[in-house]
Image (cartoon, rainbow, N blue to C red; front, side, top):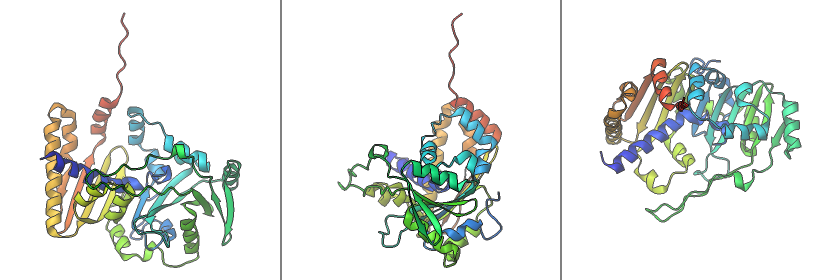
Length: 351
């Protein structure tokens, strides 16, 4: 496997797995039953019909999972994004939120290449206290159809991420990431909508009825086909690549994936499955070859790390026609082994 092919495989996997993480990190500014029968969670009714990506995270279940505690002990975590969100909204992700649905959707009148994020979170919120705390930090408030929309002051330029560099293969610079001011509205007791003002207004409109993502057959059909889990995502692949702000040269080299659907169960271990739909059968065969090559390369590299071999053994690649599937099942015992290698060793003191 050449370096270029390996990089493409890694890029494809990262973008695919981003689908699983999108909802989880939605509340960081990037993100109960996970899937209720065949219709999905009730909060879907607040998402616009033209949503290009929809994700769900059972935040409470994952935050209190055995695996999360293991990873927090083993891996460094500064919580910067979580603290930023709490500073702007007063909402503590770990204690206040039960579950989140998230969508990437274009704003009316905006460019199709600029999908924006909208999160709908259910939990325990003191709306009066949180609004008061935001106003003390300079937030503004407006009324819309009987709902109050609270908008935080713009973030300082220093806190923004660096803008992308020119793509050396084309000499062009990707469009800068759009950074809208964060707004929120408590549309129901225990339900907050977070995003930019335009999308929050659309969510409030949908509370009174209208075509939500529930009427989008492309999205809902894939949601109904998901395996049950406490985290999942479905959507158009181009919505992920656009949101990831990849260099144009890299986007053109990724496999011809049109849609993806991913679900996972996080408890003491992880069980996850991803299904990618490609433009044609040849693209699917090519993607399967890339993934198998990536796993084979990883097996070679794991020669000096036998503790990683059981993880690679859980990866299954399949599918037929225009569909590619990837699944893995990482048991708790394997995570115990892996996390030990991440823990910093404390040098023994000389006697």
